[in-house]
Image 1 (cartoon, rainbow, N blue to C red):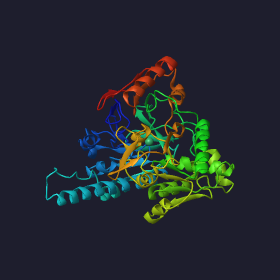
Image 2: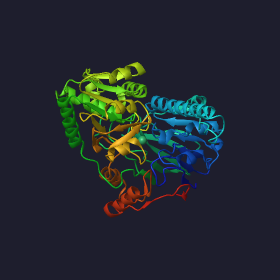
Image 3: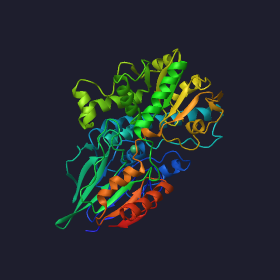
Image 4: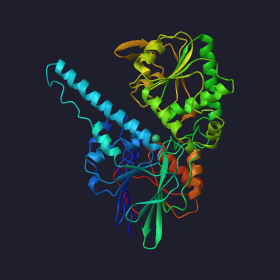
Length: 469
Ligand SMILES: [Zn+2]
């Protein structure tokens, strides 16, 4: 049997994951994510797929993040009839994220149409049609089949799928595809996004058993994060300062993943008597729903969080935590006097409720902004990190007197030392290794580390590049 693998996204970048595996008898697509962040992303999302969606035998999803899942509804729209496989705990997050993405695109279209009408017609070019609609999401979700971790299952002629834990967000999985090759099996492992071992709530990432080829992510292939303990110390210090000065702590967050990790850490601090009794707000309907999805899937938590749950302690709750879903609840937070912690999307401050909170508090010296995730070039979050003295929010100039802190240790991605540790299971095996999901510098750095430390030679695929295994 000949096996071919080709990379149609996240090749030399961190978004748009999309990998096709072709055998003599089956075509299996792993992930179909949106390109995000860069100016060319919109164009890349609109390129036709370099394969026929109608001829796919199966689609496998590593986890719910949009840069891995966000083009799935387009596959359905363009004729894919096959099943889409993911872990059971990925399913609720997938629905939350895809419905929100469909809503935002429709909202954007309506705004554009109104703007154009106000200007008296088509003076600024056509408005972008949405990549997909809520109906496309419904059609896609109808094709999803959940498959629990560790249970092999035939998903296409001669191709068996098994999910392993990836420890990145709830439900995240590495994908093991084993292909029947006339009596013996050949195995391909795709890591998906890998978390750091020991991170909050989730189990540590697992490795593949005896793979013949591996695709490994390389997001942080060139650096390590600060140790978690050190990050938590810094975080506590910021909280004490804010309490002393009566200021607000504003944390721009992604609704899925980082929010739940922060709730977990704040809850631990509370129960250890190390969190002053100030209110902690999670201000996002999406984050509230995602947190509930985590609570509903405790059976995939790590031993520590499962033990907490068994003692009757909710690892994702503590007495001063307030989840606000409605707009009134959100506005009420701004009227509040005294210190408080406010987590709100968007994670890079390029939209969402965090803008209201920043507008109300950026000009005060008592305010602390805590950055916990990657801030892309051109976003408000990046301007804050760069220390710009004034920024524009809703076309209003706001001076920045708040203190801006960057805490790297809450990352959902493994740093390079842990990527190497994960890959050490492959050393001394005859394995084809590919790196994707990483910008060129971290990807090349990881390739170098793999070569010098483990004598593993990695290939760095370009977009649409094909390899025969
Ligand atoms: Zn991810």
